[in-house]
Amino acid sequence: MDNQYQSGKTDEKRDDMLFKNINKQLAELKDGARVLVVCGAGHFYEQASRFSRAGFKDQKMEHKSAYFDNSGKTFDYPDRVESVWKQRAYFYAYTYPKIIEQDDTLNDDIKAEFINGDHDAFYKQQLKYCDLFSKNKLFE
Image 1: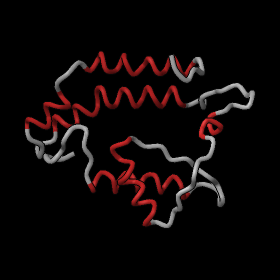
Image 2 (image 1 turned 90 degrees about the vertical axis):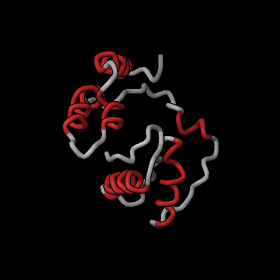
Image 3 (image 1 turned 180 degrees about the vertical axis):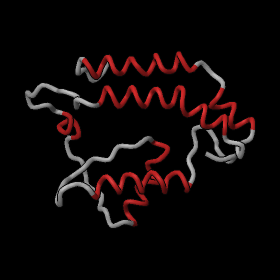
């Protein structure tokens, strides 16, 4: 976080870190594994160009709906997803705003975007996803 932050926008530094983190996880996979990397629209072109420069090749997705076909299997979220989501929600609702507030390098306008707001409501809203995870539901 720095004073150049703009809500809903990305920058080179952030996208470089995103790519570094994605690449680190990909490096831990078995050789020959195929992975679908999903990212938000704001990062798509930035990440696509980084993948291309790193030697990854575009793959065409034929019959896209087949990638999400469960072939008769019951869908189950991984055991830890609910716990991890609760930790993530708590971090962004309560911990991150405190970190931002204590950062003397940030100006008051940037701080206000993270400090102000209803943190309890955000946290409760995020916990709705935990209910979906516990019931292995993909959506409401």
